[in-house]
Figure 1 (cartoon, rainbow, N blue to C red):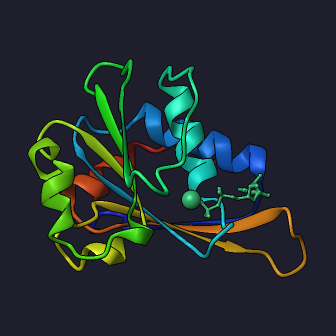
Figure 2 (cartoon, rainbow, N blue to C red):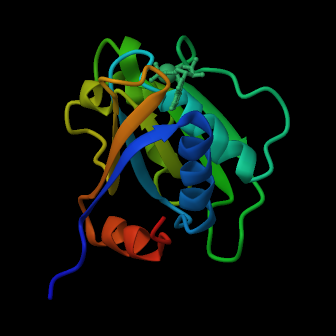
Length: 163
Ligand SMILES: Nc1ncnc2c1ncn2[C@@H]1O[C@H](COP(=O)(O)OP(=O)(O)O)[C@@H](O)[C@H]1O
Ligand SMILES: [Mg+2]
């Protein structure tokens, strides 16, 4: 049997999205890329914030809307990330801008949480992707699909407890 590559979560309220984020963080690799997909207001930054908080980030978790990248040194469990970069590429005008942001130099030793990865036009690639979408019947709930797109992502997904 092949490795599991996809998991679905239905009708999660915000607390459930935040616990999934903490669960993902607790089994995260030291480097790799988690892509957060969904419309504006879907909950991408909410998930990223909960992820960072669970790794001990106590100060303000600013949205990288204008800075495009916000870096964090975090307290990881053994084997986990020591540095997390939260990116929001919505306003990235050109993938070349990634060079000026210095993020490529960090790829080997940092975990990337990326909103609007499509703006990088393939210059950065996901290991794991979470797509968030609103539930038709409940405005405060989200349907999530978690999909691995590399062996690293498959291993990450496999470590995630089934909830
Ligand atoms: N189940 C849920 N999961 C995530 N966010 C939710 C949920 N229900 C309501 N929200 C709210 O929706 C908004 C999501 O905003 P945000 O995380 O900034 O979205 P995005 O980064 O995708 O644009 C927040 O105000 C959050 O409190
Ligand atoms: Mg956002």
